[in-house]
Length: 207
Image 1 (cartoon, one colour):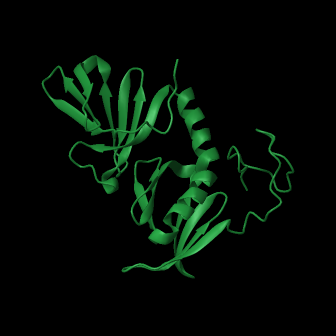
Image 2 (cartoon, rainbow, N blue to C red; image 1 turned 180 degrees about the vertical axis):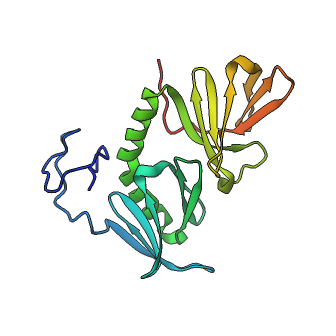
């Protein structure tokens, strides 16, 4: 069981979280805090939202589980909720449009303590910004990876888990275009570009 405020592991029977002091909910953590039926053209099932995870259940033996402790971000699509994982993968959970906003709100509130804890850990490692990204020209959400910006380099993790780095000492010029693309021109003449979107990243550390 985890604390709903900071995401810390709780001992069985604990009344308060030892890390943040929040009182442990008296609700059964094994029960969903939200659920809805999903009717899709290719796949139908039930969305179950818990305090520490979300599940898309197709049958008693087939389900997808999205654990909040492994998340980097959550994004709302037209008919789905996209879970961006720490390894750069994006996993999509289908939701009917009539339930989409409500389901996303509940999930967004549930994942906040986990994302805040992740932000604190990354800041301790020197990460200034962390947000979903994609190679320039491959802007679809399913191609999204994860871009971490540090003081001396940028680290990009592809959806397949491969890591790429750009060291600032090898960069001749850098810019962010009006389309939200971060572009680096290297001293060797090559170009590196990643989509960073037009909105602010999930967190930043300001000096």
